[in-house]
Amino acid sequence: MNAISDIPGFGHNLAPLDDSVIAEFREALAAGDRPLAARADEVVASAERATATDDDTAAKCTDLLRLIRGVTLAIQDEREKLDRPIRDASLALLSAERKRTRSALCCGAQGQGAARQIYRRPGSGSSSGARPGSGQGPR
Image (cartoon, rainbow, N blue to C red; front, top):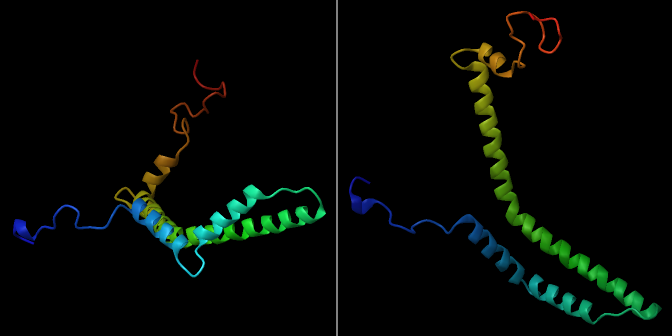
């Protein structure tokens, strides 16, 4: 990549992560023999028509609630499938940053004394030897 013509042009990479994840989620909801999006639309339409006037219709409403819960759980499962790699990568980055920061504090050029200086409580290194607010310091 020494020449300017070897540099990739604008837009050579993937779409922003937010857009691609949303597109994948919509595709997952539309995939399969009986797409989740269609099932959700059917359940919503049924819920809009449902009324409970007696024991029979109340039992049907209970069955409808089970269907709603099933579709909701299926949609959440699809979302979690897409969210898991992003969440895992985020946690890995956070863990790596914590390890790097911890090792820099404890094992840096100044050694563990630097970590003690950073974590020392305010006022613990006063010259009078008295704790701040104890009333035993110089007046």
